[in-house]
Amino acid sequence: MAKIRAIVNGVHFYTCTRAINKQTVSDNSLQNVALRFALDCMGKDLGIGRDVHLYDHKIKKHTFQIQLSVV
Image (cartoon, rainbow, N blue to C red; front, side):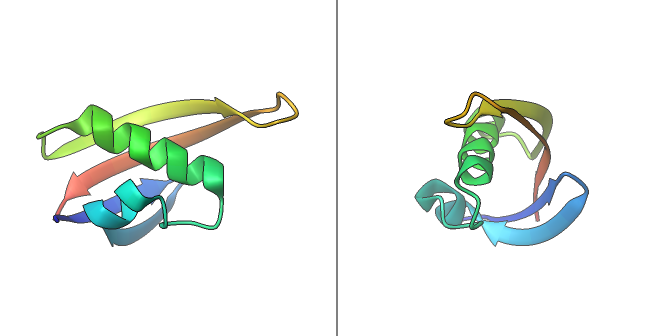
């Protein structure tokens, strides 16, 4: 369980890999999925920056600009 500094759409906060994997970081379920995807893409690297595009049930596109780094 590593401590992670996350920046999502310009808002930064600290969390841990366990919370991201359980998808309990945010009330927004799409944001939780985007964070989980970015963490999986990060692998064993110390950080990642990525735009994640997801669609909701109304086929509306949501973009999350995510930066993750290990603290």
